[in-house]
Image (cartoon, rainbow, N blue to C red):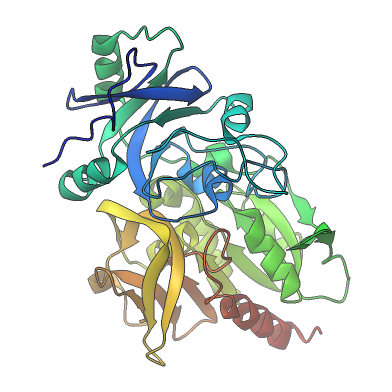
Length: 393
């Protein structure tokens, strides 16, 4: 196994990645100073690092970017998926350069620093990615100190003491604090995000926020829906008080079985109403748990914007964005659930649809932020169902 050593040894390392195994990988720190502990994963997208760093699904994770030139287009106030950055930090191959984009408002280094997020540059990210693929996603600590002073034994202890994502409910930590209407439309060059979705005659969708990405709601609005967002811990009565025509279950971080302890009973009641339901990523896993299926921690997870998924009804292949470390066990799906999508990377389950309820879900991210736009049809499919069931235009 190749060592994930720095590309060139810094004279005085100012950053380090310390794994629970005791392995120490030195580099050059950037962004905020300090230390953060979490799961070390890798992401294969070649663009969209702001969207990735602000995706709430990355709560508790340190991202290794396999694309070497991260930070080259800087940062702005529009390319974000949540109100703040959720990933703990990032590991990159090349030093972050000055931004080269007319949309840049600041450099990636200063953007990270302002959000208290740590970066580590000068690392052989290909070797680190191979290590994760072979040995699984390890627990680790990313640290940055401008003076190059690190207490390595303490950082090793910190990595070993972190319990890991399995059994951890993080949705409640990243969810919104209160109910609120969503009134943002899709982005347009030169105009930013346009308002929309407030029309009273639109079909009304209540979205449960387990750690949602903003572009999901934008696409629901674009498809013709009115959206109200509720916290992850909302009760069934609180959901129904908004008189929904349909239900949406968002993406989010952590172990679905842990989040399911409070989410699954509510989802089962949603299903009993007979109203359309759509889930994405964690929402897909929670729907599976609600119908009696099981989820399992994956060896390395799926994270990238180039994952091929096959639609079983048509044979069509979609290139998709993914970000998940847990998966639905196909063999545990009950008789009233049919598999609709599978990963062409490892044949894992990527979608399901109920045969006795108007409910379906996918494991990947159809909102394309960042990522390809092959799967936007799913928003049209869902809103069309809600429109037909509610009689609203």
